Length: 397
Image 1 (cartoon, rainbow, N blue to C red):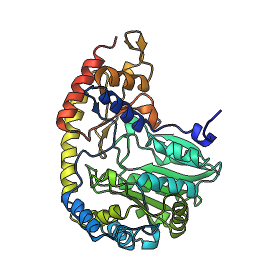
Image 2 (cartoon, rainbow, N blue to C red):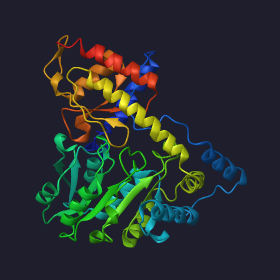
Image 3 (cartoon, rainbow, N blue to C red):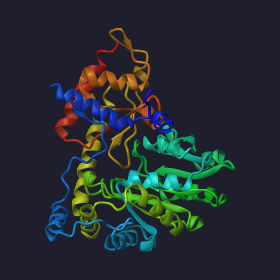
Image 4 (cartoon, rainbow, N blue to C red):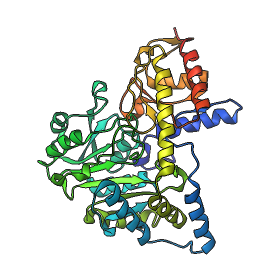
């Protein structure tokens, strides 16, 4: 019997990608589907970035690039870290990859041995657990409580640590909840981790600039964790550059060297055009990003107000990213014809085929009872989606 290797058989498909795929299939059949499942800004890449890429293409120097990234981009990333985060990195500590997801996979494979434990606060981004699974590590989940805006406490973190703990992996702003850790909250976690020098921190900061409450705070700022924090970032969210596929890390030099070695055998260097576009993005004023954030803020406020009026939906107002993560367990046990809604997967399937709205079940993020709704969509689509969701939910008995 033909079948893939076991590591592929046990791997789960990304639910965000699966829902997007299902919505595209419905669209191909002629249905008007509103897709609120993807974490993708619906804006064009700013014009000055597109022009920089065009100019580079016209120069004709589109050849292979160094595995770790072209020197000009690695220097621009160092300057970004210093300017925006007051972090001191050298170019040798920067690795450019084909998206922040690629950066994360490099790191997990670099740091995690068979049986090592990776501490992950829940809810978490869908791919974290599968990356650990590929590395043959073990996920240790720490539940972020809804009443604490889905953030974990130092006490919870310390209780999760064992002699096998190797990595603490989290995002702030968080996908899927939009929660943002404050300076003091991060410092509390750092003080715990200071006592366990074997544990490295992987801080996913891809939503750094989609932050509605204060300046971005990074775990890498604390001297207690010097040389133990890897910052993961990229250009997809802040600059509407999802399709350009470019992420990067700032890491202790030995980790960067290991990721360079690994990447050399997987993908080699990232697209030359994308790297030059990223230089233009990082070195330019942030006016386009600020404008996007203003629009996201207005959308957040509108959809939050609207969702509060939907019976059975309970949600917090997110402080970052562009998602709402409502508790929808009120609908479990209700029926759609002969079909009983037993979990978030059932509810999302029902809304996809009944309301033609694609959202993602909370089970994908380690949080059954919730759903993730992206508001990276036009006001018109958001209004249409909320109308359809409310109408479909009213049919459940």
